[in-house]
Image (cartoon, rainbow, N blue to C red; front, side, top):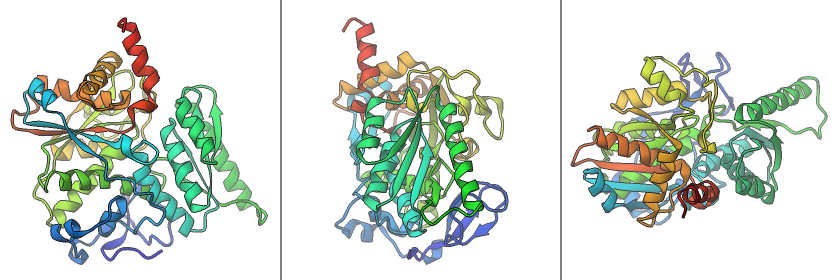
Length: 406
């Protein structure tokens, strides 16, 4: 695969070792740390005018700022940035926008990372990709794997939404529905990957597939693809950097990607400054919030996760330390909110026409708390990330209304 001119290699976030992207497919071979792409800003030949002149959209629009062009793209990205003036007035802030990721091909922000990760897997000769997921990323990976001619398998908990499970199969992906919650799906996935690795080490036959993990932060490209959300936000705001971006957070792919994007844009001289990145989690599963409150360097596993917002019920986030870095380096905050507040916030945004998901409602409820606590200024531009289409989580939203007698 032909890499972009500015790509200088892969760097480990733990030991800072550098690696050749052509030689490394997963985590750091030295310490198993998370790998990120490293760029040479001086080699980047890109300016605002060049981007403005491009007549194509999607993640590929920002190929210069990525490791390589996503050859399996389905025009993911270029999602709406929807102004919500009534919410801005209610919160007494300058402006509120919803970055509506439900407009992606499979209705989730995971499509951004899947486009890059699947392209890298195909180029690396992988026959099959696999991951553990709360649901939506499994559907996304199945769709992009099908487009690339690869097999895929998702390990999901029983509580994963019907839509995600059904569409994973519709796209031709295999699916293992694991009794229990997300950690049980992770355990089943890890057992399957260990079995596959053992078969390969033992001299698997030619018909056995080379399986690559696309679990969060197990390879560098899902969080690289996630960067494009902030690239778009800044361009959609006419190159004005928003004051705050609120990310509903599970493993941390979204906020980590946005943080990396902000630093890259600033290093390239395309913008001045970075937003404050705020992490929002359900208060019944908030390991990043707990780690920030404790002043810890990394998250600890949440003992008894129990939230209605299943997409965010990730008690042991793989990107917890990196999410904390994103918050602390930008002056952001972490906020836990109740399920009822999250669902009510989603319904309130729907009153402005935005099909906010329950997952997105966690971010909206957190932003409302930040505004009420004086952490968002009267002139601030606030972006709420809606990671998944509202109609993929319609059951929990409808149940919330029914409990109110609607």
